[in-house]
Length: 366
Image (cartoon, rainbow, N blue to C red; front, side, top):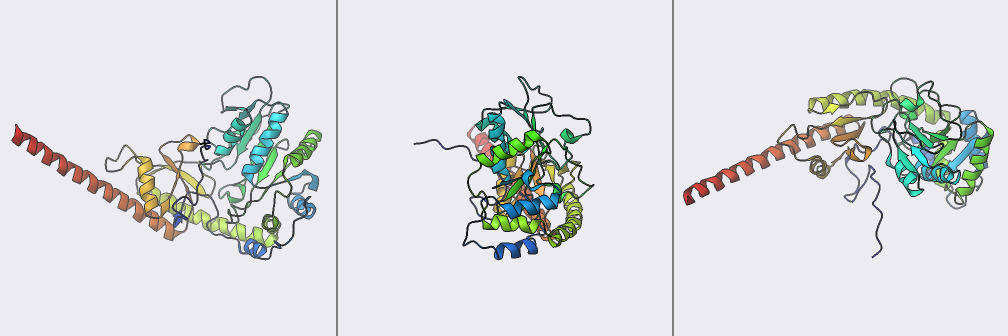
C-alpha cells in the first residue's frame, strides 16, 4: 500500500462535520460580508475568467496604490507559500527563516523543497534565506519582531510578510511592511468566507522583484482562480466592503474582551499581546487533577459542539488558540467546559470508589 502523507493541522470542519461553535479558525465571526456574499452569488461560473486576470490586477493595484504588474494572483495563501518556496529553491536559497511560532505551511513547503527550517536565533549558513514574517502573528496574535525598525534582510534574500490577519487587527494601527518585502494577502478570513480560496501577493518595488513576479506566474497553473475567487477579490476592493469590515472590528473588540474575561474566569491563562481577533490561552492541564490530558479534553469539548485549536503544532503544547466568537458561543464554551470538569470529577470519584472496594477485598483475602 502506498504511504500517505501526514495531513497538515488546521482548524474548522473535521471528520465530525462542522462544529456548532468553532473557535478553531480565525475567520471574522461577524461574517459573511453581505457585499462579498452578493458578489459570489452573482458570479458567472459558466465561463473561464480572463487567464491574465487583467481587470482584477488593475483593481487590486489601485486598491493598494501599486502598479498592476506588481500583483501576483494565487489560488490561496497556502498555494502561494509553496510556490514562492519553490522559487526560493530555484534561486539557490537553502534555508527558510520562520517566526518562533508560525503557520505550519511555511515549514512544510520548506521541507518539501529541501530548504533547512530555521527559527529566530539560528544562523543562516551558506548564503541568503527565505524570510517569513506574519503580523499579527499566529497563534499568539502579537507583533512580529521581524518587522521591528532597523531589522534588515540580507541582500539576495526573499522576505514575505503574511498579511492574513492585518485586516482583523483590533488594537493599534498595522505597521507598514518593508518596501523590500513581498506581501501576501488573503481576504477570505476578514470577509468571513474561508470556504472561498483566493489570494494575491504584492511584489516589492525593484527590478529583481519584477523578474521574480514573472517567474512566479510561470510556476502557477492556468487559472489559479475561478469565477468565485475573482468575485471575492473584486468585492474586497469595494468601499462598502471595507466600511462593513471596519464596523466589525469594533464589534469583535468588544467580544474579545468578554471572551478573554470568560477564559480567565475558567482558570485559563490568557497569553498577553494579541492584537487580532484571536488569542492563545494555556489550559490548567496538570494543575487540576479532575481534568484529563489536553487531547482528551479537546475531544470531549468537541463532542459537546465546541472546537478549539491545539497549539502543539505551533510549538506551544498545552495551549489553545481561540478565534473570537459571539456571546452565545462563549456561553456554549463555558457550559461545555463545566460539563467536562464535572464529568472528570465524576470519573475520579468512581475510580476512587472502585479502588477502595478493591482494597477492601484484598484485606479480606489476607
